[in-house]
Every structure is written in structure tokens, then in C-alpha cells.
Image (cartoon, rainbow, N blue to C red; front, side, top):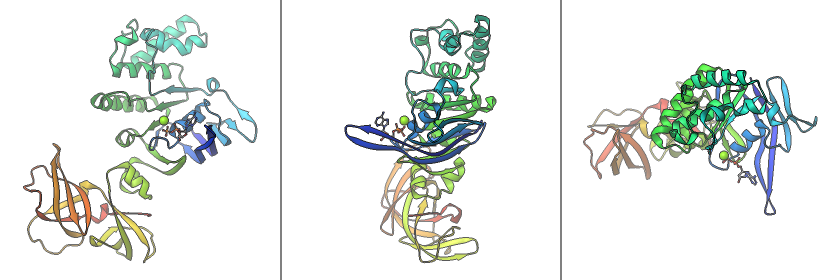
Amino acid sequence: MEIRIRGVSKHYYSEGKTIKALDEVNLTIPANKIFTLLGPSGSGKTTLLRCIVGLELPDTGEISIGDELVWSKEKNISIPPEKRGLGMVFQTYAIWPHMNVFDNVAYPLQVRKLPRDAIRESVAKTLRFVQLEGFERRPATKLSGGQQQRVALARALVAEPKVILFDEPLSNLDAKLREETRKELRAFLGKLQITAVYVTHDRVEALALSDSIAVMRAGRIIETGTPKKIYFDADHRFVADFIGRANLVKATVRAQEDGHTVVDSVLGRIVCQRRDIAIGSEATLCIRPEFIRIVEGAAQARSNRVNGRIESLVFVGEAYEAEIRAGGELLLAKIDPEAKLNEGDAVSFTLDPAHCLLVAI
Ligand code: ADP
Ligand code: MG
């Protein structure tokens, strides 16, 4: 089910101050995909999710879910949360510790006063789906963190919602479990064919889980795209910087040629992925650490070849993280863990034009 958000703003008033939590948000969330709202803390992600659910009422605008208008300031429409047909998984203590697994999952159906047999059948089906068959009588507190998350997921799914929403559901799990649970969730959601809206501030989680990502900042949607588009080909400096580690270098556009945009910077003349930016304009050159390639020996002059010196070198297992001073800039580079390099070494590196991204300043 598609979700359409038009002109939605939301202010909070606290201690005599006005906080603009959402600023004219326009967004279409496609049906049956995993859509992620990604942004730093305080950017308005939870507020937007709560407006979709109906737990928060916007000041302006319209929200529709499928064909149904669930909120309209102008038309004075406000469908209550329980009539919106949604399931939700929250960040903290998503399950009730005093209940067993069955009662936790059955709760939304018991509230609706469904017949007991129907409840038992739906709960069994949902527990089978999240691979918790046989755990019905287990007290919720006797489950691992990952199993508790699956109970929370089962409870959100048991009433067969049209849309499922998640607010940082993995943030209380430790790193390894978070990775496993993320994979499981991706598999579960893939099988379900349901519209999923997922909120996180964790860029890796967003990249790994999503079909599409909307990056938020200060109550606004800055950019929307597939994980690859957002990571490799962002239009905005904020997005490029937020989604991954990035070296950002000031540049001036000098030429558009052969499908590339050529800039001058403190790193010298750099051939970049093509962008429609006028010659003479300022832009920001964005280079991810993994695309800085150290070249050995006095190789022939190639384009995008830069000289520098290694200022620091840290072994992190799968790579060295090096800081390379070049043209006055300190660049972070990820390099081969077997490279024979030392701090203080003079090095040359190349930059693949396909991974030299120009973003607006
Ligand atoms: P996020 O989920 O991206 O961290 P939120 O939607 O929770 O962001 O918050 C957006 C902004 O609104 C923040 O500045 C936050 O402090 C403020 N805010 C959120 N909820 C309330 C509230 N109930 N009262 C006052 N301010 C709030
Ligand atoms: Mg939040």
C-alpha cells in the first residue's frame, strides 16, 4: 500500500520555545518495498513515523495510506491509529515482560475480541513465520534479545497490517546480534510483500535493509534514492557525508568533456563522474576512503594521480586506515592490509573518475 505525505509540518512547543520537527514534508512511500527514513538524531524521523501512524497530529498537510485519506487538516479528517491498519515495532521494550510469547503476540487480536480459535490459529501461523514455533509458553524474559525482537515483529504482523513501521528496532541489540537480526528482518520482509517503513540513524542498517532511502535533516527530506544511488551518487554534500565516510575537498569546475566533469582542487586537476555544473562554479569533491588506490613505483603519468605522505596508519583487521596528507588536505584512505607501508612514507595514489563524486557545496 502506497503512503503519500503532502505538505506535512509539525511544531512542538516546549519551555516557551517552538521546535519545528517537520518542515513541509512531501514524500511518496512506494507499496510493498522497504523504505527507510535515515537521518541524525533530532531530524524528525520519529515524528514523521508517528504522524503516519496517527500517534501525532501534524499542523498542516495531508497523509493518505492506499486510497484512504487518513489525515487532512483542510478537510478536517483524522482517522485514529487503530483504524489505520498498521503494525508497529518500537525501539525499546517492544514486548511485555510479564506475559509469555503467546499472550504477547495474541494481544492485538484479543483487544479486537476475535474468537479464541481464530486467535490461536493466527498466532501459530505468525510464530511459524518468525521461526518461534514451540515458544508459546516461554516467558518473554526468558528469550534472547534477537528472539524478543522476533516476538515484537510477530505481534506487529499478527493482525495482517497493510503497512508495518519500525522505529530503530535494533538499536538496543549488540553489534553482532544487530547484524544477524537485520538479515532475518530483511528475509522476513522480503517474503511478506508488505509496505515497510523503517526509521534508523544507522547508515549501514539503512544501506543493508532498504529498497529505498530518504535522508532527513532538520525536519526536511533532503534526498531520496536507492542505497547505491545515495552512497555512490548523492546530489547533496550532507547526504554524501552522512551515508559513509567521505573526504570532502573544495573544487572549481573547469571543463565538461568526454562524459566527465573536470575540476581543479588542492589535489590538482581531477577528472570526475559527470555532473551538470556550470564551468567556473564551486563544488565539493567527495572521495570515499575505499577508492583511494595506492600505486607503487614511478608509474607513467595517469590522470587523477596524486602525491602525498602517510601521517598515520592504523591496522583495523580487514584494512589499514591511513591518513594521507596531500595538497594540504588530510585524506582518510582504506588500504590493503598487506601493503608494506609505514607512517611518514611518501606515496602516490590514484582516484577512479567513476568514484570522484561532485556534490553541491
Ligand atoms: P528523530 O527521531 O529523528 O531523532 P524526533 O522526531 O524525535 O527526531 O524529533 C524531532 C525534533 O522534535 C527534535 O528537535 C526533538 O527534540 C523535538 N521533539 C520531539 N518530540 C517532542 C515533544 N514531544 N516535545 C517537544 N519536542 C519534541
Ligand atoms: Mg527517533
